[in-house]
Length: 489
Image 1 (cartoon, rainbow, N blue to C red):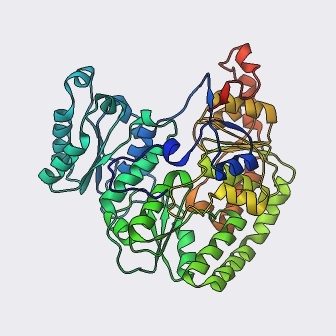
Image 2 (cartoon, rainbow, N blue to C red):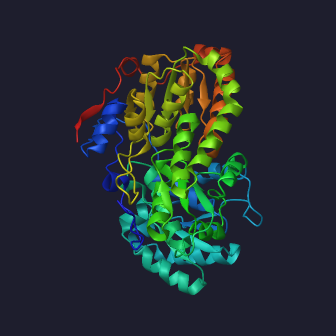
């Protein structure tokens, strides 16, 4: 499904892509049902926790250079941004970038829900402009502003004319989607409308879309050998970065959840080829990605030569670490794309994966070329990858019951508390790297050596388990996995 940048809003992932948050079965069944367009979502009678699309839209926008976000919401909706501001401070910023993310809330109150909050929105945006003089402003909607039903788009156009800068709507109401990755789509939609330019002559550049550009020093030399300059559309990316990216020859993304919408917008608006099927993580993924990219730009032999050189460089490091990892079992709890990317990576290292939890699953992406499958389906078909898997949107009790059932040697996770759950069982956890750091054989070697070191001593985790007192009653502790699923919907 191609993106529609003429619209100010973007439908949720459930509506556009058929994405789900409830499933238990095998990866093969999940991928095949998704490809056949017959994947069904399983709903729950009881939920423990989740996340919000609104938060993820704002933190992506606020990290961009020269940007200010006006959060048209109660003050609590912006409260979570402090953690993303601290993360941004650790990301190398370009010259002239703002030191901190700028998020200013309109602070909607009960009175505003009755009498309206548009005048408060106008005053907040004007004050924010006078104080910070941003190059662009994004106005993020929320559950409250959506329930009021205010015409935010007209205010954006009015303020853009008044202030003389782009003022773009970011439709980020958390209530419209149970999948927090819909917030990434709202970010991508807004920034595509504000920053992408009309296509022109193609340049020898290639785009990477992700959370951060950490690790680009390892990837730039590889792309340079192909005659391509790397452009990172990540935290602190500038307006000029997006303009240059509009003329690139190709794009790949960190994962389908965070970057597919922007990558698809670049292809639809600017004709920049989007590679979505083979992500370049680990040795196998790197080889397939480089073959695809090399073939597209007419340099397949050179691309495969680069792959062989990289493979030889890190072969001994990987093989040494595999000796420690042999026979180990690893449990995975990650976002939609990386759950199955890591399942493939661990298998490449000789680790058994008894189960993988994905926080949601996209059976397709917004790529205008609907014949290109998602990465998980490609791994099932091309590599025979198949494992027990489940989909939950950060349901801590479900994840806890699964770790309890499978008793892995370690878990691989990122966010949403799965590492804390693992520690309560005395299981060591590894906070997964994503993006450029994981690319290619260097990324595989980094993963292998880090894992080998991490699981060599789990004394700390054993001590934590001895003192942990679970907050669940005996009834909930004794429930089998996936006890709260309803019939398929």
